[in-house]
Image (spheres, rainbow, N blue to C red):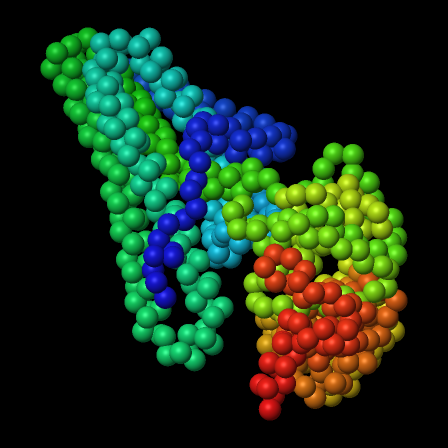
Length: 592
């Protein structure tokens, strides 16, 4: 498998990091009361942290120096009480924030999943499933620490840094200036690093998405890979993708680790400057031991939050690209959506009109060009023609999986764009050659056609398409658990279950798109009676390459070159000896 198809992820629009952060943090506002409680706890923690050095200074200069041990004991009890309460509240804060952050992630994931389900087919046509999964799982998980630390680290540490600076300058401006002399170097270093780090982490996220997409596709197509002995080729592609993933991570980490190194250097330089100024320049006569120790503690309280903030910023740069990718999908508008002033489509009889309809998938090559036809309620229309002629496109347009580019489609006189998508599709039943079954019981899969169906309705639908007999032979009958995509059943059995599911939905308009292509001839004869029952009294569109399956259609449309080349029933088209006749003769020769 060529690696080129996995090299680049879809482009992510450049968005302000502050705007992305503001949008991300807006989810926290749904939990104002818990967040307020956490902020109050953090205020107490900051207060105790700032008071501790002052208590230490007082203990040394005011009590130990004059041997006032009674006052020292009282001060120690006060400090102990304050710090024990702090420890308890830190545990409470951790629990509350963990709960809030997990709830926020659930909300974002639910919003993203719900939005993705509303997007049109063009969105999925342009993105591998693995890359969409990377958004829902990996990118959202990466936001947990950012959300938590934004409250527990960003706010209190920022307040601590500001308070420490104010306290130090109030107590001794010279010592404060010495302790903070390396701050400009830190600012320059961080500015340089952050300008490169964000780009590196964006690249890493894209490589992660590419790897995820490849693995998902590879495992989904494992039977094809093994059938064609392509294990070595896919192994090589996987190796290249993993190598790119590792390299992009190392490139990003190289800048990420530089944050800590810059802060450590500035911290050390500031500490040396503090002690040198206090001991050598000012002298012990002008600076008390308690004050010098308090400043030593304060400089740690200044640089440790800076370290935390730099780590948070590094974490932010690491994961903000994930948030950008999530919001990019949330901002993607579906090309197929309910317009303004749409109405509910009432129960229909099934008349369908194409009014000079044209359509193309790429805005260049027209698959359908100025097609018009009228279908009476209850008619069965067969669509035949070569691959790529536009047969499936016609039924996709009726279901409004894509929108027409020119003119309109009507059902019972209603322009399908003027009614809600839900009210349109709930009156349609669609059977495709991809007989997709979900993990769950056979009963659940059939009931997917009607979620409130009774047991009798489910069994009746299965009997109608001759699926009941093979179901009753299974170990748990209708309670038999199906593996992913119906694994364990034959292709024909899966197709029969899909027929039963569609039968149960009792649609007004039925679409069978190569629905019997996966059924052998013997099984097809078995379900033909069920198919005829399914077609009875409802408008139906049948697409089939095996022309024997559509002889009883009321009308047959021969689709080619973007239009309807021939129209009529089987006998009329055979007598005409045109394209349909040639297709029939070609199939007969293949059989012979």
